[in-house]
Image (cartoon, rainbow, N blue to C red; front, side, top):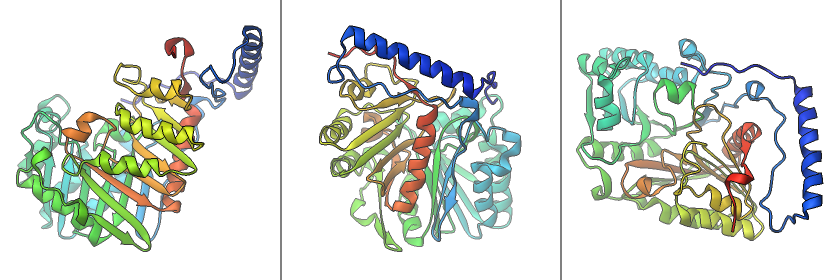
Length: 391
């Protein structure tokens, strides 16, 4: 169910409270003699009430589409037509020959019904999922969508490993690839912050199709063959690189790209526990690169999280303001490079889980992701200095 709406407060009252807080904080810092060189930065709290936050911006080009979930404004599963679920069902309904899916979780009945209708009109529909969070979870109350598919003659296969088949990609007619962080669940579409990018390109679709076929044939995890040197395409002048984890050793490719940032770095992370990647960003910040990030609150204060590492290095970070989850796994570099996909910035994603990463060098697409970052930053919350004492 969608989270209950909290009581609205007027913008005027919030602005007055913010001014009072800033005045008191300024007096305190003056009296205490605190220096900005020794105190982690405190970003001015937003005056935007959570319930009146700006809406997400979705857009498309000649060969791409970008969608963001908007759980504060698009949160009714009964009105799915205007959501990412609606965009996905449009793709399903338009498919003529094949729909091949590698997706972690599933509980959306309208999507199941659309896939069954596609199967009935002769489309080759196949799904690879995770065993525990996919087929086993399908037996839980209010689930059963995978069983709907199977009863209609659609084959569903799962990995048999303790690690996750954590991908969220779809291939339509060997011509269009759909990827990003969005699980095909009510929570993923209507409660979490997620992103989806759709690429209309047979060459890109073929890269995802090769990975799908490997998993369909039972090749999961580190023993899967790597074809990273065959996973780059320049589409309408836009370089695109795709990596699959764990076989492509994603962080070995990602960290050098981050380390090459010259002007700015932004990230939005459900899980960010990898220190080498954090250090690469912190090093760039120390070199003058404008760097900031948003962490999902859940798990961000654990020992393994690198949020405190950023904070104590005086890199601005906030905790997400969504009452549910920020589930994105996004890095934006220099206003023209976007890194997205299913890949959390963690050792499990690097070493164990089946994941995918797409890296796109496009100022137009990067602008949309920067707008989403700014939108989520405006409702995110500054860290409590009392919780994060720095050496």
